[in-house]
Image 1 (cartoon, rainbow, N blue to C red):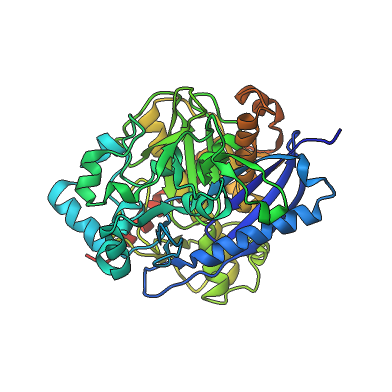
Image 2: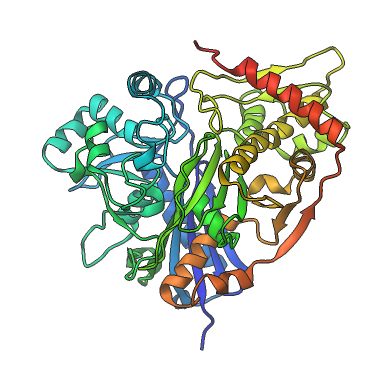
Length: 503
């Protein structure tokens, strides 16, 4: 009798990967492919929808070919995806009508400012859990309707699909008796500004407010449904495999970090940086710039919620230094340079390339490098680039502490940047609490696999996931309070200099 395995398709902002796990959370094989970042205009960011599907199929096939297993032993697949990135396609042909508009994109800035000016930043928060911001999907849908003639035409015919990446993937890689599935899950739907955070349904008031035709939106399902979202198209691996979970990437990381108790926090360091606190079944409306979001919903169980803080630019700053500036040839060089100096030499970088997210939510902010003197070296700038992520995380955690009134004794961390020892140690130092790294840092994919395992019945519930989670390294704070206070004082000044740059 063969062993059971679980697959996870992780479609992220810069790459797509497929990982096969055994039921003890061990990685059996994986494959990943980067996709092109398209910048048509300053502040605009797009992806090619066809490239994303082609890469998804390739990584699934490649990972299975690398694994020395019988493909029939892959019992279920979970999908996790970059959230808020928005697509439009023809419901009949499946043809994309425009590139995917990425969550970092700023083209809706004018629309955001107009709404805030007329109605206020928090005018939809009680319904959606979200502030008005360029970050979310609804205004991208509005932009497409106003600027892409074919999309407006198909909408008038009742033939337009609007979706986030999860919907696009399911539509293209499943085949259910020849039918296409047009669905999303509650975590992704909660990032559109269109779903009611309490009812978990498309909100008639919000749909009307943003002028989005309801028939263009996918059916909303639990993150782990009673029946699979669909069956993986037989043409991909030669057999059908049920897809039993969909989770937005940060909710998947929360799941993969086994953060199932109220007050437990995870922070993911990737292109951006995202901190989630599990708040149980409580919907906490933030007063300090956080988002109220769905954590997950399993089958018929009650929905679980989270507070979230979002940093737009974390690992993306290191990629910018490498790719756009030519500061280094490889990202690991930044770590090596940073380790050659004791501090940042007085340099602070605020990477507000697309404004500032939590807790400031300023579309008018732009990136600055401050504190330059003749003493500053390349190594100081490298160190400052790492510290900028940790300092942004400090701002998010500070807001989370104020909103939740729950003592925060440690945070669990994951994502590509946690391999940076200087970053993780500085993060513990500046927060003043331990930072805990798990044995498996690919927690986004792992969370999708865990959720699909619950869906297919390999795991009974969340308690089985908790048993699988293992600690690797715990970074403990070593910085004296006076030094921490000085760093935070200068960081605040740097933030002030980046604010209202465009006003």
